[in-house]
Image (tube, rainbow, N blue to C red; front, side, top):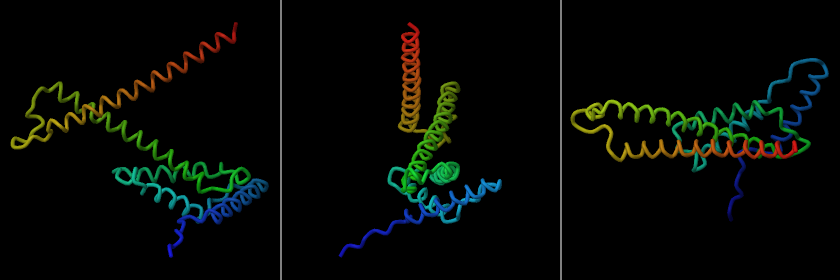
Length: 184
C-alpha cells in the first residue's frame, strides 16, 4: 500500500498561528503597545517553505541559492502582517508566492551582476588586443567556446533589456494617446 505523503508544513496549524498572532496584534494596538513578534512556529514554516522551494529542479543548481532563500524569508517576514485570514485560509500558498517572486528578483539581480562582469571582461579584452593577457603561457585560460558563451549571454541580456524598454515606451505611448483622446 502506498504511503500518503507527509506535508512539511501543516497549513491548518500555520493558519491558526497567524490568526492568533493577528488577534494579539489587535490587542496590542488597542493598548498602544508595539506589534508582537512573529511566532517561532510561523518562522519555522516560512523557513521550510523557502528551503523546500529552493530544492525544486529549476532552482537547486544556482550558486546563490542561499541568497535566494534569505531573500524569500526576508520578504515573507516583511509581508507577514499583510496576510488576511478573512480572504484566505491558505497561508502556505500566500508565502509560497512571495518566495517565488523573491527568487525571481534574486535571479534577475544575479543575472545583471553577471552581465556587468562579462561586459567589463569583454570590453577589456577588446581594448587590450593582447591574447597573452588571457593565457598562462601553457594553456589558454579563455577558450573560444567560453568567449562565445560570454558574448551570447551579453547579447541575450541586452536584447531582453531593449525589449523591456520598447514595451515600456509602447505602454507610455498608448497611455499618452488615451490621455489625448480623453481630452478631446
